[in-house]
Image (cartoon, rainbow, N blue to C red; front, side, top):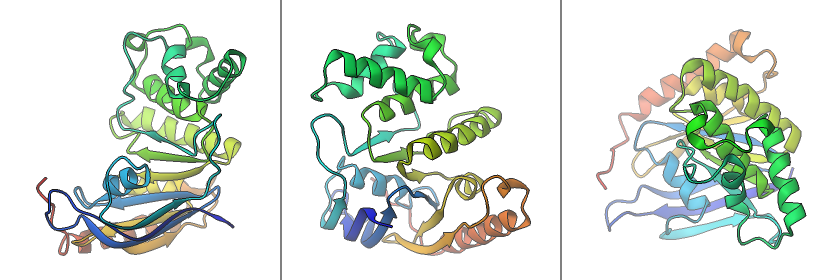
Length: 254
């Protein structure tokens, strides 16, 4: 399967301090769901922001193997906070990511409606953000990302601020959307069970500078994962690896 994200020998430094990570190598295949886990401050979100070109890198290269087109974006990012504009309706918030693309009004309308349909909120298009629950706001954030028709979704703890029931519901919804759209997803989470439930592969980040210290391939059918004995075994293995990484990870002060 073709690689859609390639990170080679990458380094990021903050304020001339010790590098957050150095010599980092990472790939994501087309259509793959990959999660990054690690202790707080280990560099998970920094990796995501580097891939999204939101922060400068000091060494190495990042290749996004997606065609550059005027009508779509190669990737889109979903954050922990939905960051909806309170003065815009749901429809207008989803439209935000489409600004600057070469799209006619009819195609913009179809893109927005298609994205809202994917997240199950077509009936909410005229509502204001304050009229939505936390889970609904996060779905709108995902719809805004989907509307630009990216090949890659970069997701930075998108369910971290939600209650357990809403989080579980949105995990299932995300897998449905991923199955329907065939997007590649690079997902950051501190929840090991979430990572194992969602992913094809889980990468454990640790050390200083941070590295990928272990890779876990998840072959259990997603329909059986939470009930499968191997699911808990993998969670325990990752938790053990995470505990070991505390000995070598120094949280940088930035």
